[in-house]
Structures are given as C-alpha cells and as structure tokens.
Length: 408
Image (cartoon, rainbow, N blue to C red; front, side, top):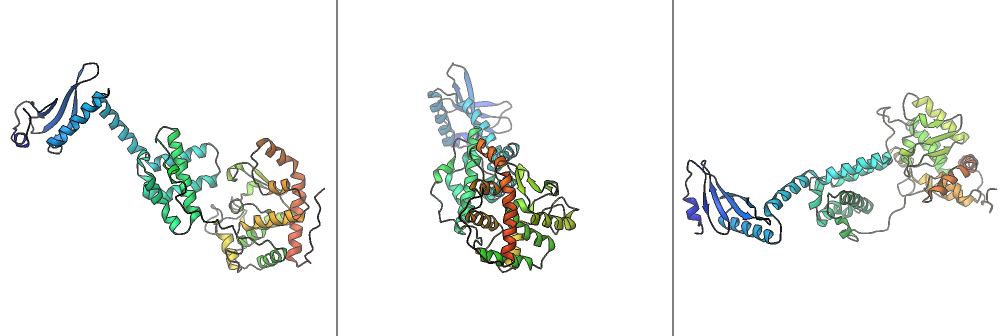
C-alpha cells in the first residue's frame, strides 16, 4: 500500500530497524533512534540486488523521494547503475570543489615557472589572477559559466581600461585551456565571449621622436634634481633603450664593464632569450657613477626603501612627470620608440641590427640564433654612434638631415 504523509508521521521507532514500503522499490527504513531514511531497492543490469539512499524524511519529502526513485529507474533503464552513478557524481563533486579556478590558475602559473617563463610574465599572471579571484576564484572551474567571467572583467572595460579587460580575459582563457588539457574542465567558456568586450583603438605609448625635442629632453634630464639613482636611470634609459623592467631590475652581476657588455638573463626577458647589450663609453660612465651609490646592493638601481629590492616600476615615469613631461608626451618605454625611430631614419644601420638591439624576437629560431652573432659588431658600433648622437643633440648641435646610406 502506498505511503502517505500522515502515515509516515505516525511511525514509531522500535528496538530494531524496520521497513515500511511505498511503491516500485521505494521504502522507509525506521531506525531505533527515530530516523526515517528513504531507500530504493533495485536490481542492476546483471540482476544483483542493490540499495540506493535517497535522504531522510522530512528533509526529503514523500513527493521528492518518489521523484528521486523515478530518476533512478530512468537511469537504470538506460543501462546505468544509479548507485554507481551517485557514487561517481559524489566523487566528481568532491573533485570540483577542490579544483577551484584559483587552484587551477596557480597550477598553471607553476607550470609556466617550470617551463622557464620570464619572472615578469609570472608576476603579470599572478596579477591577472588577483583581478578575478574575488569573482570566480573560489568557484569550481568546471562549473563556471561565460556570464560569470564577463562579469569579472566588465568593471575594467567600464573604466575604459580596455587592455586590462582584454588581457585579463585572455589569461582566464589560458587557465581554462590548461584545465581542458588536463581533463579538469569540459570546455573553455571564454570562446563564447569573443567580441563581447569593446575594442577601442589602443593608445600607443608616448615617445618623443623629433631630434630637436630629444635634445630638449636630454637637457632636462641633466637638470633633474631628485634622487641621484633616479637621475642615473634617466640618463641610462636612452643610451641602452631596454625595456623599463629590464633597466630597473638590472643586477651588478650582469654588468661587465671591462668587456663593455650587459648580459640580461633569459628569465628577465620578454622573449625568454638572453639579451646582450653593448655598452658605449657614455653608458659605462653611468654605470661607474651608479656603482659609487649602489655597490652594496644586488641591484644597480635599488629601491630607496631597501637595497634588497629594485627601483619601483613607476620611478622613471614619475621623474619624467617631475621634469614637466606628461604621460601623453613621454614614457619610460618611449625611449625604445625614440631609438628605433631615429636609428632607422639615420639610414646607417641594418634593420636586423636595430631589431636585435631592441630584443625583438624572431619566430625563426635558427635565423634568430644566426642574427645574434652576425650583428654583434654592427651593434657595438651602433651603440657608440647612438650615444655620440644623443650627446650632440643634448649639446644643441645643428640638426642635419640623415644621409641616405646604409652602414657598410
């Protein structure tokens, strides 16, 4: 006879557990402590009798117990053992709970570290993780939906920081593809978000490219009255035109003044390839002055707070602002664009040598390896020519058109 709610409420505990049946294999197990537990008895595909626990009454109502029994019967009809399915689902839920987005992202970043990714790249990916951790960090990665990811990056788009929004979304996609490759997530939901973010034209980093204005900038740098180490970083920036992060994290062990070369290790380079920078007489002079200030530190340009850390990433930009140059006029990164533009316009140097000096990667690794050696002599000559040219601009020499000739 089918159970009713009133009949279930009337059931009393006995000295031993006993069953009260409903229909189609569903029954209540009443225990001596008064608990009333729903069970479903069935035979699996090989005829073995099995039992499936469906929860306790009244947490699981009579109606809900019957619905759970019907779902189990439907699962069995499709050839799947419902007890086994419940066990697998429980295990999957436990795995999902451990495999949060933050946990998988940290695993992905650790893989990047083991793969030899540059320290700067690892720090950026840690930063991208911090940007979305509050929104999706504690969510099981396999359960995250596209709208949740979009909600996590939309605030940066709303603040008109499109690059931050796009690059954060790109990082999230990288983590998901890592999870898919390791069978932790079924798909990459960021693929459904293509075109969802605004694509405004990127703003190019500001740089001074006219020789006359370059001379004015160099004279302004000579008059800088801030921290001596900041002045030296300003002076060195146009001479070596490395990336700002490579400059501020320069270590004394990388500098060989006798051989006039600065060897930046692959771990610090964007392309993860060691970069050798030929040093002009002027660059060597700046390093010698810096040694008088920071020889006690690992870093050529240590933080003013502690010699154990490098100069802040905003120091050179802040110094340029102090000199009166806005962010729309000149940036620390702008020294690279300055060198690239004027060296190419000079007509004296091969484009390959200039590209190597800028540490721009070459997709052809054999060609890239050849170029590192083939253009060294030219790069040494170019470094000295460039420093002499900057001195001439600083000292107010007449600006003459570059001759139309290549370095021979």
